[in-house]
Length: 284
Image 1 (cartoon, rainbow, N blue to C red):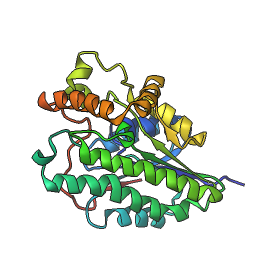
Image 2 (cartoon, rainbow, N blue to C red):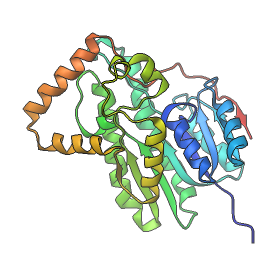
Image 3 (spheres, helix red, strand yellow):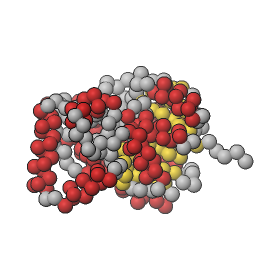
Image 4 (cartoon, rainbow, N blue to C red):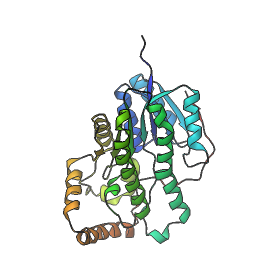
């Protein structure tokens, strides 16, 4: 009997942590459905993974905040008869500025992608995940999931939602053998971050991990059924220290660090929000 071909669906898979997780999954022999914006290098990523690892990689270029985009993605997977046993909600956007200086539209798009899209994708695909003896959901949060961050207020709030949502689902879906994890990486040296973040340029990012390191620990943690995955012992140590410190002390430190950054016009590593596009292209 030929085993059923199963797929891992990854959003935001054309760069950074998403691309690294696609590579990590392909290296483990997993077939992939990769989702990213048009003209983001997704097709080239898929071609490289097919050639390097011999896995089946399907791509769909799609803006997840466009009207009906998530339903379109689900319907396409259903029509193709794709059996999905791993869902990785990685796509997200952020900013780094004084709250009042960013537009309301940018914040609403951030909430739409970081929160609404994660909820919608998870809700739609759980029935497909339940078809399997064992299935997995990995939601990508952030260090910002674990603490309030000045000058990243809406981003931190959305990522806090992702963590709480993930931990709640972890308990709720356990009877169905669907394992839910939340990845909360610290600073990660993506191409965009290296270009923009002066602290990384100056070699001061002692907590910084590469996307490949984050991806490896994320997928390892997912399959070990870890509810919370924080790559790097230094990052885990910092979180423990942060839980002990009084809020007044923590607030003083965070304001000092992040105010310096925003005044130097250091921007977040996540790409800015984009204008919703049409449904996009699909490759098989």
